[in-house]
Length: 89
Image (cartoon, rainbow, N blue to C red; front, side, top):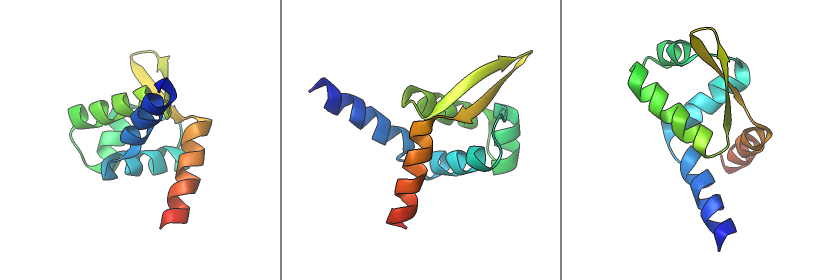
């Protein structure tokens, strides 16, 4: 049962159009900060931060501190999810 809950958490992590946009953006341009992501997607900083937090909880985004900013990149699992989503298109 524990495995099913982890799977549910992962699926909920990308079950949002904005988070899918973020995954695609990070696939194209890794190592972006929250501010850069918010500006590129034309969304509020807090909204971008919350979406990235959910992606990290789902195990789809890795965070790396760089000075005063945090850089984000996709995990291998996220790359697999994007392939899966392309099949569904």
